[in-house]
Image (cartoon, rainbow, N blue to C red):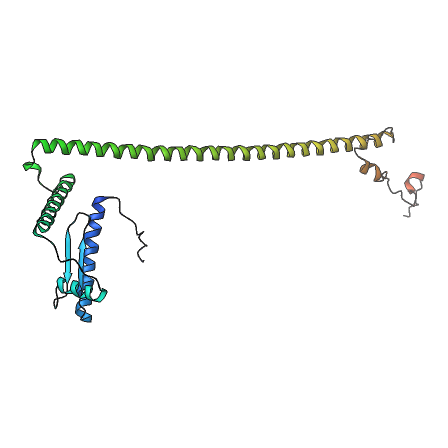
Length: 247
């Protein structure tokens, strides 16, 4: 699986920014070294971190000064050479101050993360560090509560929307049941009217001594009386005839 694209924007977290800078600086120096060796190119690379730390690289066959001079000649620009000793001293002092400040910041960052031993830290510094950590924890908790409140509000809105949808579905279901009940009542009324009509038809045909038919269909079917077959020859015994005997 390929790696996802990373948004190119300033990293807000100082720790993550420093880690990313260290990794990418190493990759950039490696690529510059490979390009110099493979292609016999003269490369000069100067990097200043956000804390003012200098990192430089140049090909083995040249130097940073030579590359800068060649750059000036190619671009047609010149750096003023008239710098006095006072100015040079001020520059060195500013550079020393920046280095000291950078060292203090790195040390403070390591104290925050617990990467160094705190046994040699003074009480005042520990108290200040504790206060700063408490302030940071308060900010984190405030932001955490804001996110939780936003999530709670979103869940409440979602719950309300679901309740409204359930009410609409229940209303449709209720209307459907009412429609079905009304149709059943209409069918029952039609059946009752039909039975009453059949009763009126049967009342027009009185039957004496016979069973009353239960429906018009039974009235339409003819009824036959059962009968018995009579013999065609008379029974001689009924007339008292006797045959003579011979003997």
